[in-house]
Image (tube, rainbow, N blue to C red; front, side, top):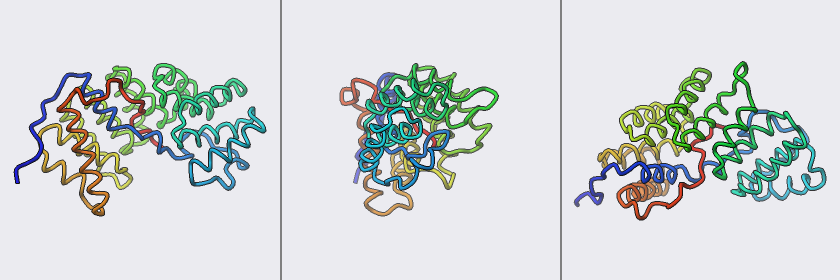
Length: 271
């Protein structure tokens, strides 16, 4: 049978940006409740529901009873983000930071929430207050890099990823973000190099696998791309990954089918 894909041309920058953002969609919606610098207080963390919707109910009730409590607001904001309620999470965390000025854990989560809703410059600025040059958090450096990438400032973004990698060498999340940064600027060989490094890590997520397959596919090596996205997976997951790859390549080959606006995404936010 002939290969179903047509050779994919690398399209104009705007189309590729939409494609990459689409490939990143859902990252923040799946964030863990522990994905932020700083810890949740013991009362908030006790009996934390695993289901995001249930967590929203539990922490929402506690938040309404005491909206100025930092630990409760942090847990509620995280639950809202994990449940995909990004605008509400940003609103809750904004009020919490006003009630608790200087709380770095809240600032970190608020910055992430701002990134979720596409306020990338404000997110970058807030995250800058959540840590300091003399005590940097590599996770926040990586998220700041994703904000810069969304703003089209790719060289600056890579400097942030480089700083993060000095603290957390070979972290697959940071390497994945670096690869996607190169992809956004249409340097596919460098994107592949970084994503292969990320993929080699035993801690690499399925998103890394998908993004590597996408970069390989964009270079016209479709059989290899399918092998990557299917490798060592159960049949149902392999089929889902192949469908994802085909959809992303279709969007790249058909700019009219690509989103008119870059979807909200914060690349791969390390947890």
